[in-house]
Image (cartoon, rainbow, N blue to C red; front, side, top):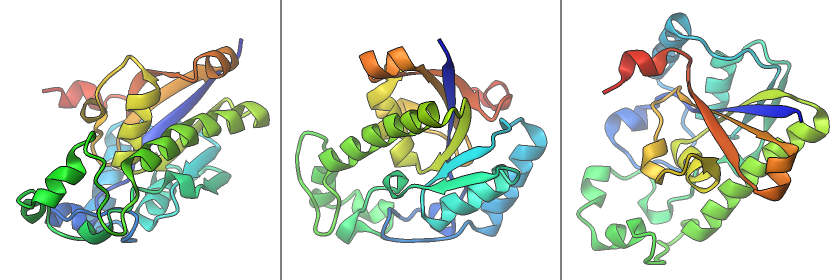
Length: 213
């Protein structure tokens, strides 16, 4: 049975990352100079898969990352479902300040059910991420695309993999550095029967060995 591969990659650094700001889908920042330089360094030192199809979040930081890492891809498909979570009133604030607020602690509690004003409910976000991953594989199977890449956000990547990937891991264990991620694979039987994928590699190739520990 034919196996399909999808390379899930977190976007590069933005100025907000460097400043410790809590940035979701409510802020559309490009990569910063350090972020672009870091991606170019990654491509020089390690190996990214060669693909012709790239799925991408519509936010500028993801689109720019996709252009830098997969410049030769003929098909770049923007998917709104790959956007980061909306953080509402917490958007754009310093994490060092937010962690001192009781409301933010409630927001971080997965069992709390608290939704800040203007934010996307956690349950809706996780459902969106799980559905998006399976729909990307559905697209590949129907279009006959054996291998593709997906450039998205750290929160999306962690949610997708914690829900749908084998081996089973907590969301934080799927955290990826900027410009890095995981290769997952699936076949039609696994997709239909289990609704799961298998994580098989860390990206870019060679990065894990040099950066362990």
